[in-house]
Image (cartoon, rainbow, N blue to C red; front, side, top):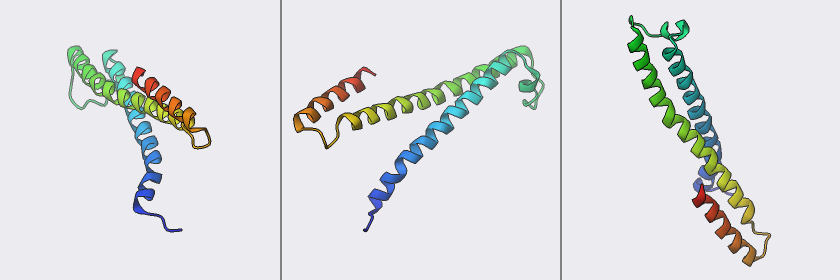
Amino acid sequence: MVVSEDQKKADLRPKRNNVMLAVSGIAGLVMVVLAIGFFLQQTWATAIWPWKASKLSNIYLSSIFAAIAAPMLWIAWSRIVRLQIERVRYELVSDDRPKDCRVRSEKLADEVAVKL
């Protein structure tokens, strides 16, 4: 059986989504931990900053880390939701069901996606 390039790319897509989900989620959590560490003046956090910093400098660095973490965690969370919607849509719209059930299921899946 000959496999086209499009099929090969489609087979890699879920793995790539899972890797991006894990990377953005883990990196976002690391940034949150660093933001909390700098805000609370923890020595393990302030030791990684190479220059001498005051309390306000550490709070400023904390806000930068938090600003980086927010979109990274949002990306990870939105990917989880999107993958769940795609899974539900796939389960609702399967080929073994009658056509009228598939049409109703597609409408239901679209309504769920809009609400989320």
